[in-house]
Length: 192
Image 1: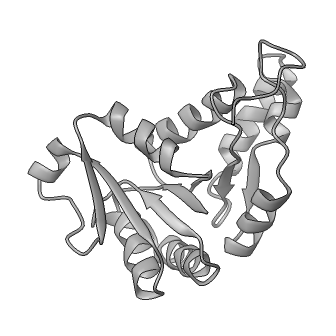
Image 2 (image 1 turned 45 degrees about the vertical axis):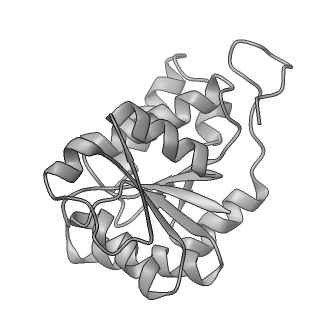
């Protein structure tokens, strides 16, 4: 099993760095591989370094323009270099069995929402999860609940978005996950 990790290219506070390292270590110790954006900077680098230090599988996926900017992690056993950010996300989705978003900024949100939306549309049936560190995702969850309350988002889709505190919670959520039916085809199972 591999889990795609979406997170920031900046380090954030110490508590976020610690949580990222603990998550990556916990996944490696459980025999779960990490697929991530391939960088050595920020929380991305923390995740890769911790998983590698724990003997875990780490696959980086990075577009050529970020390799050219010298952001690629030099210590990865596998680094898939692609042509664009679009190809990066598609390749990460292809390689992963689930997705988790750690704290980050616009890029993290964009990756999170694309993976979650693809699941709603039946393009995959993989769990999408938030690792909530220090209540980081609480404002987002409040906004998403407002969207559900106002009828823009089905509550069952919001309920299918996992919120966990650590690697053990993530793995338990993934193990018990049941994907809701495709958005526009009630009763039609999602694609595998």
